[in-house]
Length: 435
Ligand SMILES: [Zn+2]
Image (cartoon, rainbow, N blue to C red):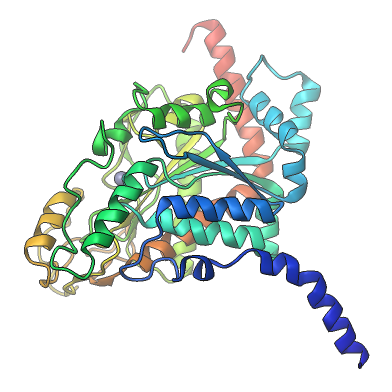
């Protein structure tokens, strides 16, 4: 055997068990994530993640459940193999960064800056019909577990990534089952006839001041309270909650949100919201994506929503809102004529439910053209209409998610220093009674 073939065979033997052990999403689910009219169901997504966690030293799987309807509530810890071996120490440093158990000593502070990681929580799919992110994370986790690119290594070395694939697993399965039952029939675009959370429906994202639901309490545990999260509480410095909005307007919203700001949130948090949100927007622009907006629709004041709730704890809380398909059915929208804007630009949110009703009553009719087509600072490249698919949602979310993880990796040192400063200031001002 020629020597190079010998080497090749040895190399394949070395790599094959690791590469072959984790099937790709296409192999495991039988279709590419985001394929028209195809959905991966939460229970199978969880099985896939458990398989990856068994095979990969970069992924750990935890079940914080049960959910309201007795299903698993998955939390994944994703980082380099070395970091995961050292995970308890890294968690201790992160909680110390947030002055848990008292202020860090000078030596502890220096150790945080030297060895701490950027801890990033990403939550998905709290609104179950906004299903794209529950599909996106399947590709994301597979790539993070199996890819050896410098970019992935940079992320894994510098970030501890906490992933909640769905904040409402029960609803993800209700929506998937209803859609699969009706796909290919005249009822394909029909909305789910029940609430997608048994007690609070869409208002599961209005519960972060009351914590009345199990899913809210489990999320609060990851964020702030190790005891209620079976010891898995982290106090992440950055938190992104991924949503979808209506189908007729911008393709994605990234931070910052609109005025007013809330005087009880430290101003640094608004600055960091802008920096990380705009890193996401810039990555989407670099990929040639259109319809990216900020300073629109969502306010900087309200405190009931998931992603906002971290602000009062000096955590950077981010939101993305991607335009919706009809669950997994493509949406066709008439093209706007930029030389004849149809109506004044509107900053109002698209009426999701009216769109859904219209889609059901007139499934073959294209949606009216977008009205907001004026290029400007927060919306330099407006969406002008066309076809929009579940795969577009997955693509936009993958770009935005990687952009955040990479920005966190690149800014690890700065982030730790700035979060330490703001936490120290908060404690001092609290002791003086000035806040
Ligand atoms: Zn939503």
